Amino acid sequence: MKRFNPYSWPPWLRQLCAICAQVIIPITIFQAIRTILWPTTFDVILLAILVLLAVAFHLDWI
Image (cartoon, rainbow, N blue to C red; front, side, top):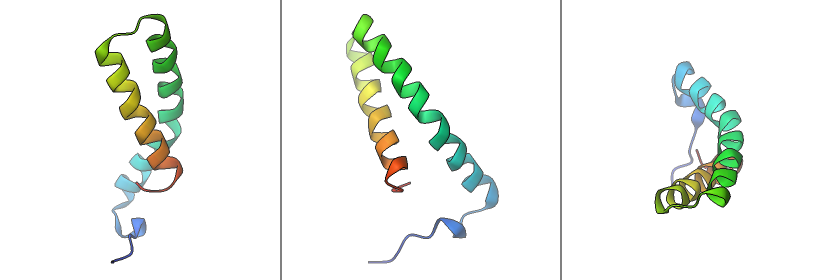
């Protein structure tokens, strides 16, 4: 299996990923509170996607 190297990306893409990694947690917390107060199917699906993205950024999968 080929090893993933994020340094081969252009600088603007690395910076975009760094910004997303910092912003995803507050957005996920806000969405969780919103889902607890007014749950809809869309909110639950969006929350699941945001949690998966947050885990992916935390574990350096992205």
